Length: 222
Ligand SMILES: [Zn+2]
Image 1: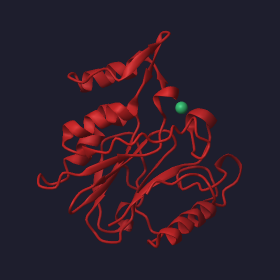
Image 2: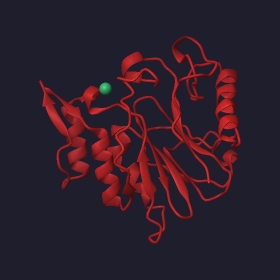
Image 3: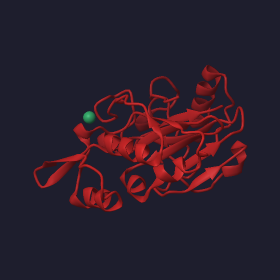
Image 4: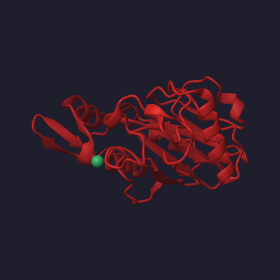
């Protein structure tokens, strides 16, 4: 389930349904927002989530308390009823669902180039090819990057097509298309759904658009 910022009790730059406990928002409001989502979905308000660091760490959990305070950018679980979540505000929130386990991944360009998507997919057994969905994130329309970003992607994925177009001396990088390519190569089946751009669409939090802001989430449970 991908959330928006609509509804919720946060105010100021976090206005709406901020689910990011690592933001400077009032923790009581973030908790209340999580509870509101959990109630609506009929799931536990105790979500497993990590301190996201734009790396490649994948943690398998059977209980939400196991990852308290730990760093990483992907969670995986096979335990029934345990919600796993990552937060984003332009980065890619990715859900991976297999026959026996499910995962959530947070990927910005650094995690994408470092291989966080492959790391998450490699946790699925070979007989269970996961299906992947990429959620609301910065679209190519608003993702202007420097040469170092496209070079890092090219270096990590030398056989990939170029998912960017020159824009003056910078580039417009289609990070979703790049992620779909990486996920397919890693063995996932990828839904071709083109999610809303978080910068264009004010229903979502966007760091690029607003600077200090809240976080929407992808939450997966079995
Ligand atoms: Zn856009």
